[in-house]
Image (cartoon, rainbow, N blue to C red; front, side, top):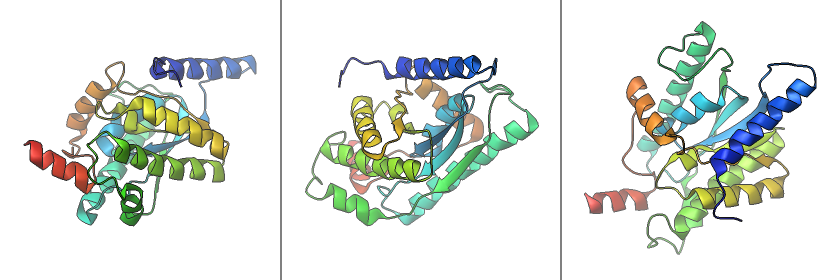
Length: 233
């Protein structure tokens, strides 16, 4: 893969291409309505991604994060994800987009909560416990979550899948796209390229987190990232 690829621009071009295809079929002005399975790591990271993509896709959020190794923390994060989606759906139903970068094209969002199986994460991380944050252990974690997403997308007939993880400045967007595209080929479903931190996406996620009063955790989710966070305080 070309490390100089601009995944944000690629996503914009794909959306424009699909819109053009819809218009060529006689549905002038209709925005793309493909079914997207969106892996989400948490509500704050998904906030901007959902605000942006609900204009163009029928989104189902797939909350699958076995890396979260404390049950209480997992429940807190998944409930915040569901609360945000409920609020976004209320906006769509009431056409209430005050302070939002959304229009009447915005669609309702569905959600699937995956199994909570931290043993799967520990299995993937075995032997990599001492790797630094952002290294090979994290790449294994990306693969674990994205493979579950790709498989579900194929099984349930989604047009494409992607992840909110690329919004984080601490996550490797190149590796995420590389892994996602490989899994897309494996399971026969299109991986939507992204780098959601671009165009002030990360900044917007912070604004939205404040607007909705979202719980913003101070570590990725796994015990290793938590310990690392405690060490650097």
